[in-house]
Each structure stands twice: as C-alpha cells, then as structure tokens.
Image (cartoon, rainbow over all chains, first blue to last red; front, side, top):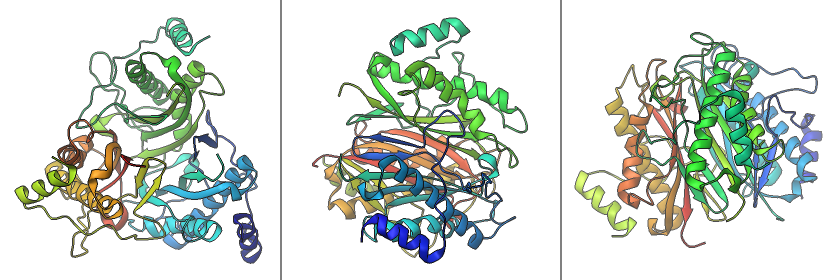
Length: 159
Length: 159
Length: 159
C-alpha cells in the first residue's frame, strides 16, 4: 500500500479528520524544502474550527489525553506536507520528530505523549520509513496555550 | 537590492547596531557549514558592551519588549553569518528559525516575540527567501538569564 | 590518532564506561542517516544497569554534577553512533549539539553543563572536527526525570 492509501484507510478506520494545512501564526512558512530534506514548522493542535487543544500535562490533562493531542498534531503535519508535495508518496522517510510537551515540573512521560504522533507516522509510512530519530522535552508554556508542539524533518524520494 | 544593501539600509533607517559576531560561551562554534546548509549556534542578546538582555516574558518584560530582544538576537545571527561568509549575499534562503523564550507558565505569545527576528530576516532576505519554517517554545530559564535564544539554518547560494 | 584510538585512550585514562547503544523508549530510532548527515535521537543518561541519572539542576544537583551527567549522555551518543557506523572514524565532523537541561527557573549555567558533552566530543574528534554549533536551553522536566537530554548531528566522511 502507498502512503496515501494507508493514510486514507487510517482516517476512515478511526474516523480521524485531516485538519486543513497549517497557516502561519507569524512570519514563517509551514514547510521548506532544501536539497532532499523537507523541514516543517512547529505545528500546533489546531482543529478545523480554529480552536487550539490547550492544557498542561500533569495538571489539566493526563498523558493519555496528551497522546491524542500529539496524534492531532501529527495529522496537521501530514496535512501540511501533503498540501506542499501534492502526495505523501513523495516522502522517502521520516528523518526526525521533535516534540515539546506543555507540562508540569513533575511530569516525565513526554515519550509516551509523543508516541501519539510517532505511531501515526509509523502507520502511514511503515515501520522502516516511518520511524525516525526523536527528542521529547517539556516546556512551561507553548504558543496559544497549546498542549503539544511538534516539528519534523522528512527525506524526499524524488528530488 | 542585495541582502547586504537591505541590511545596511535597515541599520541606517532604524539606527540599529550590528553587534560583533558571536563569541562562544563554551566548547562550540557560532556557525558550521555542511553541504549547502549553514547551521548557527543558539545566539543570545549580547550587546557590544557584553551585557546580556535578560528577563522573563510575562514577569520582567512584556511581549513587545521581548520582540525587540528577538530582533537583537536576529542582528547577532546576521553578524555571525556575515563574518563567516564574508557577505550575506551568499545566503540563498532562510531554512529554519528555532526560538526559545524565557517566560512564565502563563505566557503564550512566543510567536509574537519571535517575529522580532523573523521580520528582520524577511526584510533583509526578502519575503520569499527570508521566510523559513519556525518553532517557538517557552523555557523556564536560558543561559546567562537571557530573555530569548535563537538558532537558525540557512541555505547557501554558491556551494 | 584516529577517533577510535582517542576514545579508547580517554575511556582507559578516566575509567569511563561506554554505555550500551541507546534503546528506543518509544516509536523512534536512535540514529538516522540522510545524505551525508547523521541525526541522533535525544539521548538520556542511562547507565548499563538501566538507571537514569535524574534530578533538577539548581535544586537536586549543581552545575558540576550536571556537567558529569552531560558527559555521560555524550558517551551514550558516541556508543550509539559507533554501533551504527561500525567505527567513529567514519565521522567527518560534529555539526551540531542541542542540549536541554532539567533545571530551576533561576539556573543559568546551561552552557557550563553542556560543556560536559562538548569537551568529550572535542577530545574524541579533535578541536576542529569535534566542535560544532550548539544550543543549550532549560526545561522544567525531561523524560524519565533525566537531568540532561542531548541530540546531535554529525557529518559523515564516506557517503
């Protein structure tokens, strides 16, 4: 199955919605291609209605809820990349995922939260190409009060 | 107009000073070139007198003041890149800006702060080449108590 | 001396142990190669016994102790890269080190802490190839309560 076919099957199976491609909240682009690499901006969990999934892990939301937010951010990244490339089939592999979790000082489950995005990428691009390096860290606050912010780097197949 | 000419016009128009190129505060370099990419170290707002613009957004300084600090960091990055390359005209485009704002837990205007740097880069390199991807996050503290730390990735024109 | 020879001499001289290569704590890889670049995941200070060196700088541990933890993370990165490449002699240079220090809001010595990793890399790869760009930031919390998390980018010699 192609990346596109896997994405569409996942959306249907889980009744997930692909949010609209990211719109900049400042002077930046959602994605930039340089050589064979595609860098994405830090994406936030913004729904089709423009509302941001906010909250602080360990206080307002637990790791399981934050995991769902990280998947939502992953879907936003895929939507942005798809809009830029025309098709996710042009992605050769996930190189890197960098995730920042809005959390309390005693919250230590950042990796479990970020798995929400990583598991999505693995399902769409496959267990080899869909799994890259990753860092997960905590932050005291994020733009617009978002619970999770994630940026990614992809390698392209055809450049 | 060239990037160099735009920078000089901006400096004169706003009476901004280009700080000296960054000097490492540890075992690192201010800039490394690999292939067509130029990575910069995280830059701090250090003036010609060596003083650091410190403070925590949401507590000591507001978003507007922090925006000015982010521009100061942007000028420091330009100074470093210019010293390394000899001329900013060798920059093909801004690929990425990553900005960390020293802030309280209820401060959520990191993008507005980081615009201070991004708007500078857009003015110098132009609205297409000067605008890259970007992430803005919060941190409870930064080196030397700095209010803002920013690193950037540029693509070079002639390598 | 080769990078491998320098590493082995350092381990013997200081009685340092090279920890086992990193095992993912989620859906990610410890290292991904793309073009001539090698990206590593964020590494944590996990000993051979699986225990994590935790604590918050400025509260549980001081800058000197955190410096030792950063060196431990640097050894973990070298172990991962060496396992992937077969030999550290395939590394052309350190491009970038990004370090996050688990710290209090008044701790500002992140660069001094991260030097623990940077000095190790400089000793192994030499003062030119072993010193890259770097950012050091603070975070309110890190995965598993770790005191330090570091990711790195290397340029390869033979690809």
